Picture (cartoon, rainbow, N blue to C red):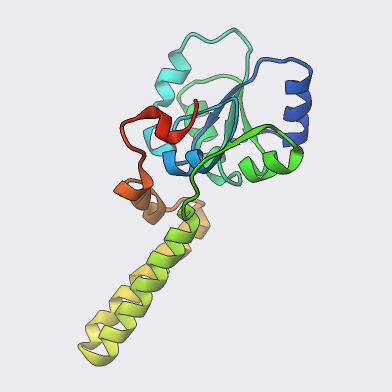
Length: 185
């Protein structure tokens, strides 16, 4: 499936020209709370109901724009939406980071450790732990760094990250029940 893309600069021009933009941000609620395009609404990738969007009440031909941090999860969301039959889905190239550079209006909230950094910390910790245990306790523990390495290779090849999806569900990556805690949207 080929996903249609739009540059943040082109999206910014459309906003300035008064075009109505339906933009969903597929990052975690905590990532969204930290910084998001003001007119985006948060629909985390792991909770995205593509069928609902495909069957939803949308104006004929109106595009559904998708954004994430840097483009990867946005592309995954677009593929999921297209597979469910959602017409006219557009991924924002470069994600929120590129939108900030292009001058789109953003809202900033409480800072947090990005999911990408959390994955690197977790993977590095597991590799270190497995190596130390393999050296000092039992050589069988060397399997842990091997499994993490295989997971990282798979993640790179498929452009998906099981560890990231798991970490996204951990309590510190969730917002409280109060919708205001995660910003507008």
